[in-house]
Image 1 (cartoon, rainbow, N blue to C red):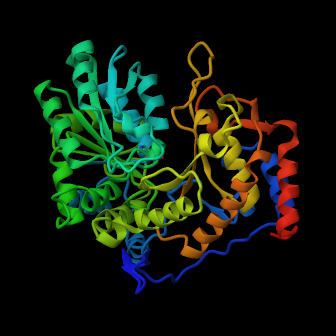
Image 2 (tube, helix red, strand yellow; image 1 turned 180 degrees about the horizontal axis):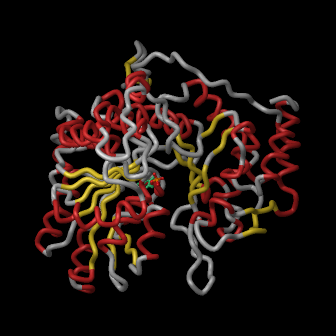
Length: 481
Ligand SMILES: *Cc1c(COP(=O)(O)O)cnc(C)c1O
């Protein structure tokens, strides 16, 4: 929700009261210097005690509602036949209008099962954009992942409302090139996590559905940020202004064959699920569910989380819940743009992003500019952001570096966790960093895991740039902040 002030300015406003808080600390800059060194310049390896603001991700870190917490207290801890599961299935029926529901322990578990059941070696999987875990699971099953996005997606300065759209012409071309029986499915990710949380439009989804139906290709919908994508459709797509989030979700779901989600995002819990109206797909997946996840009524999740997910699923259809992330992200992005910072526009659904290629143009991609930027952001602010660039890519099978399309530093805003003064503080420190950007230098790997290297990889800063940056900071702000 936003409210209009008497000067005409729109500001995001919290439609909730904060009644439980968690203490946080702004550690002095010299301690931050030690901490980032000990973490191998990888923000994933920073302990939270070293963080002032944790903007790594919105995954499992959102503030839950009182009703979600209350629901956890009445969970039914049964191995089989848990009442908590039947409440979830009823919520899925209401909110997603799908008949068959399978909990899994998180989003990547859903991807693992989908890969196991629907991908044959030599297949291709088409998608608007990949997510890290998606690509690895599908490739491990023997598929080639093809991203068929529009040219607009990779423009970091844009006012296109739906940069997450799938390119329909490329879709048709792929069908001609590979033949439909080689295509495991087409996957639509709402919203495209790695390229700024950008949504796709209903019009685009409908067109993808039509082509898929014509060629008998399954449409798999990754709805990890379903309510955010629905919120953008309401705000940005003609004809949807007066539709409710629930109505938009129903319309989207009527176009999907299989829906899956990481429940860690839109529903603010720790879990995931797969849902469908096709019993035959459910049955195929069910065969493997107990092998990797658990019995069909808990699927690797705690029943407490299933209860909270049930409430979260219903709550995400409320306008103020669906918009909680996007409205604050919009404010953050607009403030950065006002201050001349190279933020990705338009604002997306899970985080505000800085374009590291524009922020640090003097660092080449082989110096991991997005990685260097996340380290520098931590030094300058105590906030943890996430590298979403080349470090987050896998190397090619022959070991050559695969440069990412975009080099982004992602500052996630977990829903209902941070306030406007936190954002103003960030904008100020980022502006300081931008004026001192020439002090930031390259990183290089000193330990590089063979897969998903961004999680545990360790790097070092070249030529001692980190110390020069810290000296400049101390000259302006002193040692204690
Ligand atoms: C987070 C996410 C996943 C993976 O889910 P996990 O719960 O982290 O395993 C898959 N797809 C998208 C779009 C996501 O945002």
